[in-house]
Length: 553
Figure 1 (cartoon, helix red, strand yellow):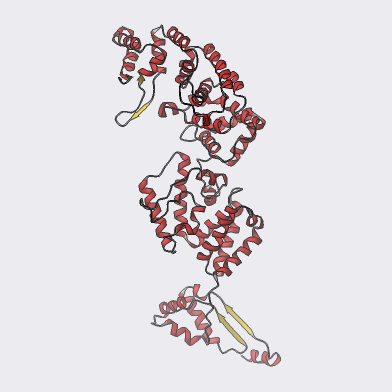
Figure 2 (tube, helix red, strand yellow):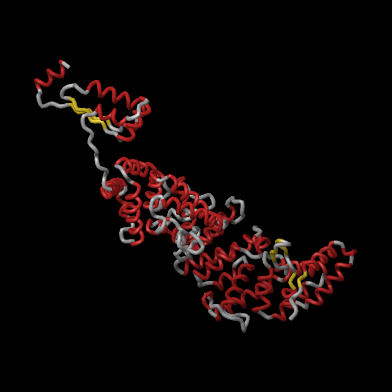
């Protein structure tokens, strides 16, 4: 005390200010020690003590620590004056947060300045979400620090404002953060051949509405802008007759999210949470590499397709199909005739081999991979299909594509045309048909029967070419019993029923396209009863069991 008094005489205007912040965040016994200290030293001259605390919290600590009824009264006796600091205005906190982000991430904050959709999401983020959840300067600082820490580890070109929104939830609304993570995990399953049932849709929607209701947003959920951040929320409405629903994706909605590498993208969502892409997803680098290869080096494009096909997954060929899905669904086409020709050449080189090495045709009755390539060709019509027909290794796939273009042009004659699917004109088609039929003739029936989907070749040939010639060749190729049974096996179709599951009927109408079904049926019966024929007899019985007659008129 004597020393302080001496200082006061020498420097009469001197003051010492001791600031103790966040007193209410201490353990109860620590807060009480500070209060005792303040009471003992409060009379020191030239010293001002400023304690910062939440009076309600600190009074509860006093109640608990001292076992008294009125901690607030105890506090009032210690402090001469308690100044109540008004809370920060929400707009001031939002501006403070934006200033911090602009200083740390100037490029990201200016991104999409001319994009109305990006600007809408930005305004929604800062005005609605930050206005709702950021209540103190501490909230702003914590959120800014979390973004500074994590953003450098996020995979390149992901959406900055989506990431800020997610970090805001993680910091201030963990329940909605957890819901979002679970929801996006299920969204991702759509790219991994999964789906969500109606019960799960309703439960997820109700849980989300309950969370929003606590914030006053349930009746007008769209006002939160949530449907611009996550896909499948356009049916989130209490007024719907079917009740609120999520996972209701509009046409092309997921593709838009994927193109923008958004949080709601089934191919990118995991990068926002775990700084890595989903295990089932094809990386954007793979897609870019394929796009470049079809333009510059079709042989390299073939290598990329093979590499993706062989990449380990429980479903063989999954990553190849994922690549094709992204190309089909993406808003950007394969640009230019050179790139489209390169893509066609890569497909014509590989597709038959891929079909042989998967069970898609056996399990599904068709090749999903081929179906995707057909859609890609419709979307990105190539200009050199004749060259692919002449040289492509995948003659089965080429026949599949020829049939698609034949149907689009209304062939066989008299059938309805689908001009929206046609990318060959009739003159080009006829030239390609003539070329591929010559290849069929050169290949021969025996090798055709061994193809992954022989009916595509046989029906292409008999329906679009010289039917009598094809039937003659089929008859000659099936003179021997073994070849006859092999040919019928190649003609078997696919069906799936609740009582039998997947099975492979021998449709009478398939047989009729190539030969007389009555004669075939009679020959099968003869072979089936000839026990001395051994394996031929067993196979004939199997085919008889699979025979499915055409319905009578």
